[in-house]
Length: 78
Image (tube, rainbow, N blue to C red):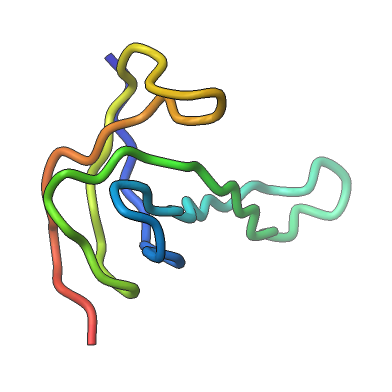
C-alpha cells in the first residue's frame, strides 16, 4: 500500500481535498536539487483545512479522479 505525506492546498469540496506532495530530485548533468510537486485529489472524511500536513494512502477508485484516502492529520495548519 502506497502512503504519501503532503500539504492540503484546497479543501472546498464536501469530502474532497487537493493535496500537494513535494519531492526533490537531482539533475543528472548539473547535480542541482530541483523541487517537483504533484497534486492528488483525496477522499476526506476527517475534515481537513488548508495548510494541514496529512498522510494519505491508495484505495479503491472512489470517483473518476479520486483514488486516495486521508489516513490522519500529521500537523494542523494555520
